Image 1: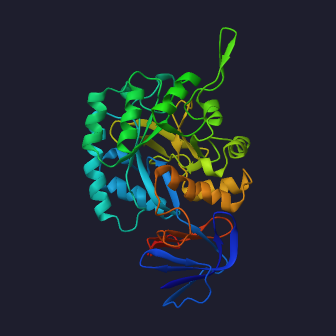
Image 2: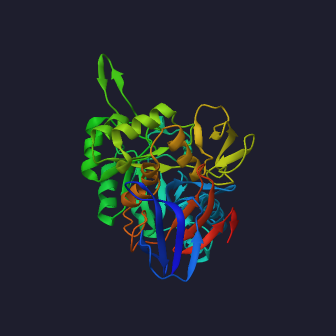
Image 3: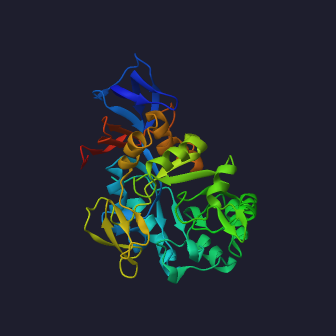
Amino acid sequence: MLKISGGKVILRDRVAENRNVYVENGRIAAVGADHLPFDEELKAEGRFVSPGFIEMHTHGGGDCDFLDGTPEAFLTASELHASHGVTTLIPTATSGTLQDTLNLNAAYEEAVRRNTHGADMPGIHLEGPYFAYGQRGAQDPRHLRNPEPEEYNQILNACPHVLRWSIAPELPGALGLGEELKKRGILAAVGHSDAEWPEMEAAWNAGYTHVTHLYSGMSTVHRKNAYRYIGVVEAAYLMDEMTVEIIADGCHLPAELLKFVYKFKGADRIALVTDSMRGAGMPDGTTSMLGHWQNGLETIIEDGVAKLPDRTAFAGSVATFDRLVRNMLTMAEVPMHEVIAMASTTPARIMGFSDRGELAEGLRADIVLFDDNVNVSLVMREGKTIWKDGQKA
């Protein structure tokens, strides 16, 4: 039995001081009990004791992209994000060739077998290639296409670890894909889409329950002749049960929009994501690549974000997860326990993970310690410390 004492414990409804967290056999044995016997003590010394962060949408980091299709790419990125507090990570692949997508599975499985100091990787997120050309952002236009059952079923059958898929639901064939994903228990998400309200209603009925990086790569209020029509953004607010994710890197959305989303969707419907690419953790002035290292899209890192060279669009963030938490606290002025809900509890529920996301008895002991400035000093995955003071433990 391990006792974590002397910390500020982040619960779902508050931050509680003078509470202990007990860990045994990789699980949380108790929270708040004062007199349980223990074999080892970890003194938090006033730091926050938080559930591990759950990253639903990242393309890589440490100069690696998951679309590279190698176990080393998965492990490098997973370890980088783990060092910043992520204990669960869903590797995300951008739009690529069919073969690039099919290559993911073997590399993913090998990485999972070898993963000792990275975040847990329970499955894969496919972002594309079924997107609206006009909302492509930094998605490679060479690979965008409409969903065809023959192709997407081939992908799903060859890649049994797909947990979520982001799609433009207005494309021909997209509703059928949504129904197929729902049948397989895979999260269908709206992304890079020009959909209007009727198409969003149809998407919801077909199983699309989540919106990928709200405000980025999607339609909003627009006019046709004299009449106004709403887009994906407004539909996400009108549909009370629709969940959303936001890139809170301080670049993709200004402070005012972070506050707006929080006010109208609430922490129970918002997941924080980095949408980080291989440049995560790299300094300004670095050139990088979005997608496969051989044939992806060139990017530049500038002003703390990745951009296309012509600066017409962002190309994913270079943020690590601690930056998201810090920004929601300082820029959006959200209380700590609500920020951590968006970092842990809500993404766990969106992804259907019932064994993690909170500091509660019986759940996985995925635990992060950080100071008042969200400097992560200890990362624990299933009760085992994997990072301490920025070094592998």
